[in-house]
Image (cartoon, rainbow, N blue to C red):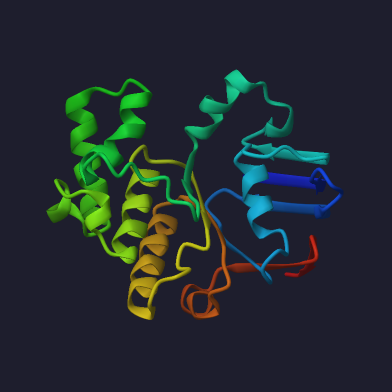
Length: 220
């Protein structure tokens, strides 16, 4: 079953910069896919189009049978319930505890508080941060903040996990730990799509790899 399908997708930004040009790509349900390429190749744009953060200039982006490029604003929150998003600007809430950061997505969707708390602690346990649930994010290391972002992304048990350079700025030990987390999610059937420069991670996890150069698929 195809989870994500891009057909002849282009994305041009104001000022004329074309981030993607004529990209066609199918990602099946339960696949692990790494999008690789140099900085500015279009990897982040590709993820943002899948998550309906950006809309394509041309072509179609279909997720779970739904054309997300033509989705009305009110439909986007329903679409996003399928996604766990780990983007480079963490957007952590530094005035709230680690626990409150993770439970927030469930509170927004009106989840039962007791069940939400159970899920939040399970997600923190999964990423090895349960012992820091009362801490403020500012007191965490870079690697711990990244793991907190992953806990928040997976707390609602998404079917698709999108991550943009999730091991960027991390030392090799933290990067390996985070790689194993993504492997775990993939093994329970989550579709995992990572934009990454990390070839060590790719060698370890053996995903399907798609290289983008200058906004086009160069090699698969």
